[in-house]
Image 1: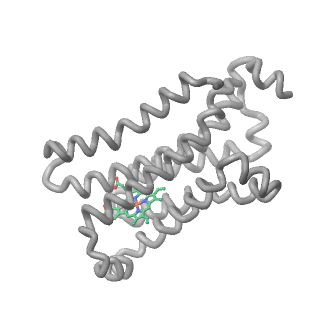
Image 2: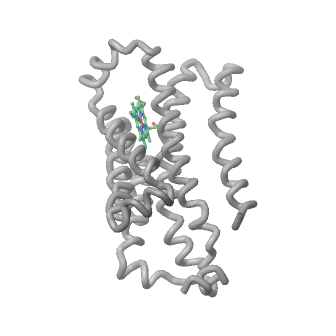
Length: 206
Ligand code: HEM
């Protein structure tokens, strides 16, 4: 398997955090409201993983190192997994699995609907991220996977709705997101500085 060491290191690096946080909650190291801390960390983590996923193609273009694209699917799936953990933490720790409360929550906190929409789109991307779906959907696959930009927009809107007062942290993430989208515009993408010669993998593909 190509870049096996890199893929495995990334896998371990991303997988370890939720386990560590659950351990911290177990030993009462997350403060008086560990459930809320877990919800926030998983949500912010999902957004960061989404930004990292979007950064991989420009990174590959600039460094010509094929390893970046080899972890792209994994990072996208991790973003979905963390968003699912974020939802699970919310349902379990905040809602206490009181399903009758869900209707009240949805009417009082519309940002949850925005988050749910983003999660549904992430689910569509995750289930069609395999080669089989790529072959079956043909040209439509690329169109469908443009949903990732809508996920970013909804994720940022969901976040903005929550922070409202202190915009500094939100603005930093929004700025990074906007920059990553700019780097995907063809006229900009083709002018990106290249720091290294194309790797053997891309020379063979060309
Ligand atoms: C059904 C889906 C979702 C639900 C029910 C949900 C719910 C929540 C809740 C209850 C909070 C905490 C609000 C507070 O602090 O008062 C939150 C925070 C957050 N969520 Fe979600 N969310 C969902 C999906 C998502 C998705 C898909 C993303 C990212 C792509 C995301 C990113 C975030 C972020 C960045 C925060 C703020 C964390 C912080 O304050 O540090 N959420 N969400």
